[in-house]
Length: 495
Image (cartoon, rainbow, N blue to C red; front, side, top):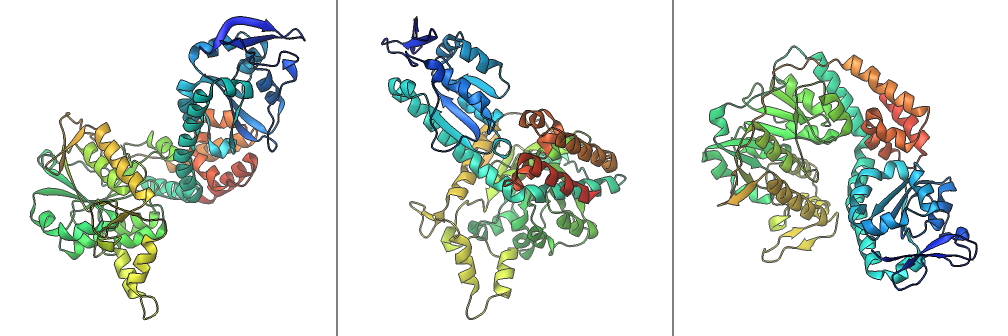
């Protein structure tokens, strides 16, 4: 509690709170006239640190360009104390305002603030409150900064892929609906195979030194899409290959696929449909899974389909999570470097190697193209490893894998991740009676209804509104109504 339980009276008759040292938290003359001074006109979401009597926050309620106000106090006791003032009561009753304390600010930000809906995020302070609570003010600033660092990376990916994801999901759902009677969409792994160690094969440079172990070991081999070509080049036919990449270029991973192999090809609903059709036309087994895309999750309610995690968005973790969902309790990673080892970005035999060497010439060599690939972002030397570098993104992937292992009770023992906890095997039927036409009509009608009242709160309360948030992120420079209209027009292309 940062306030004294005594309440003072300002000269205009308003009641104002006092800090424990007796200093007023609001103006003693005319607190009703208090307002926060902004460097520019306030827009989007405003976080106000220091509620006190709430006079300064009440002024913001009438600002049309402010779509969400998050008012935060030092602790829960102080927050409850502030709620007795008339201005704070008005704030609490307003739909576009949220009251919280420092301890749950991060949770509120993750569950209530969506960049695509609220645009800007601005942190401001009650000046008197900040002067009296500098340490708490610093902690709130750090919380907001850390949140922005995390959400900005995710939002930038949505802004880049949002439109493509929606297109891929709709086309893949249409594909599933057209092949409902075929029995390859859900493939169960026999119990004797689950007892093996699942080898998760990524395409990091160290894979070059692991080929013989994979070839002669007793593994159930699960390859990432990038490593698929490398394994085939070394006469290793993987048991499964997983792909979560939405881009058209990812289909090049599968040009080398053989006809009617033992391999099961696992695609996220966001995967590029050209990749799906390529392996399907070669009469290979196909299985669909879904990650955390809200449109995929909505469609998955009507299907028997695996739900997998990919951590920070890497296919290596997706492959590991798929193995876990099948019941594997022992997992070994190969080529999961999350680093540029030996001055190389990938192992030999990937589609990039073929692409770079086929297009190299005396002016631009393949090595120069590999170097350009590595130096897209700032490199960081890895201590103790010669000629090995990493980046901020690769570090994030590595940390994400560690978090996945801990969350799923996998512990590293002699190079193998072993789960001491009994894993519940997910069983899936071999058919998905999914009606694409019915789903598509509901989807487009849901967006059309949102266009009648493009309010952030209404969108967040609608399953169809949540399903198009990544697509709205793609149209980030438009108004909310404009983004909704573009998302709707985009959806109409896949009827």
